[in-house]
Amino acid sequence: MWKHFEPVHAVTYFHPRARAAYEAVGLRGYWRGYFAGRAAPLGATGAAPVISAFFTFAPPMVSRALPGIWQLATPQEALRARLTGAVQALAELTYELPETHLSEAADLLEQAAAAAQTAGRVLGAVNAALPVGEYPLARLWQAATTLREHRGDGHVAALVAAGLDPVETLAWRVAVDMPPQNLFGRGWSEEQWLAARERLARRGWLTPDGAATGHGQAGFQAIEDATDLAAEHPWRALGPDRTDRLRELLEPMARACHTLIPAGSPIGLPALPA
Image 1: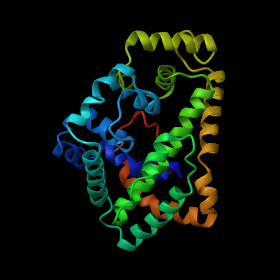
Image 2: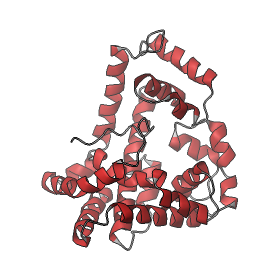
Image 3: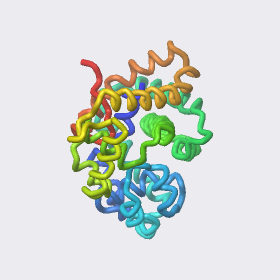
């Protein structure tokens, strides 16, 4: 199900209309829109909670954005901009689907999101507490975002429990499937990356030249399995029949949205089966 709802959420990062909506409220530049939009449900927060919750960004990068970004746009303005941009993006990508299709998908995805257990999941909780959207695409995007952040909170917990720090996590991804520029784009230096790679090598996850080992692959698969287990309650609550129906409804939307996600994106979202 993650492969089906994550692309719906991800339009907020990659669609030109989403970026334009942030710029319209004074948030020019990709990272201003990213940090303001994703952090806005927390309120006018400083850097520390965002460093913790977003996990993979270098602290100095976050501190350059927060709390100063709220002088450009309030959290309420950022929330309106992110929803406006996401809805405009989804409208462009789903214009061929009938209103009944979108409404049914929004109903089922909201039911799954409402069943998400948010204790210990900060980003999932603050998104779940936002007002419900008025129109199907707004409802759909907000539910997808709640489920996405709920799953992400669980993934961070699994990484912490496994003893991986943020830069080690990204260094592992670089060894497996992510271009190094994504790591550096999150504020980590080459020196920090090399030190993290050395720590992973001492742990037996990487070879001395930086290739993934079988031990490392098994260790990270255990993290992925723990993430999936922690994220499955909404789907147990929805039940197999409604979950299957929701998957069918999301399929054309997910495929359309997936075309926006660049290869090697740090989202790490696999393509849907052909």
